[in-house]
Image 1: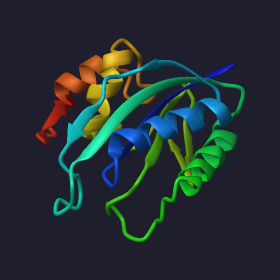
Image 2: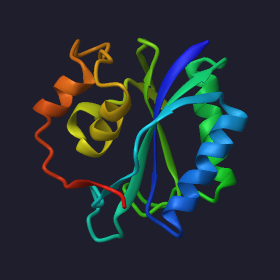
Image 3: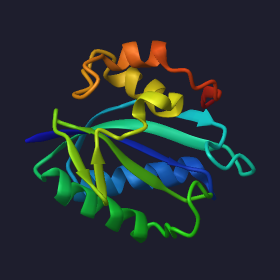
Image 4: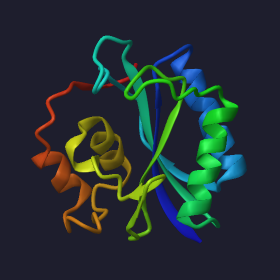
Length: 160
């Protein structure tokens, strides 16, 4: 069984309901969810003139390898209505593989660990909520350490 850490998020429509649907589809099509972070509200990153995002980290046990998992994730995004029209643009759902076991992949459709993980508070904070001691396989620092060192000042707030 493989262990994947995912970040789910979106800023269109009923954000909370969309994340709930994404969790259900991930559990049905990808594997079992063993841990989930609280929900966090984050200002848009990259293209700031859009609604705030709602984000959550998941720990998923999956029988699939990383390539198979990303294909299933892309299918789920499409099933939920995700349209990839502009980089960093608004989206109903976004599912990223942050970490997969201690593996490293560098392909055009799959980069693991996520290459920007250490630079994005909106990914580190939810991940640290469920796996603060998890070691980044390239940087050899824990997620908790990366969060403390992160220079991203984008506000990440608990969702109420």
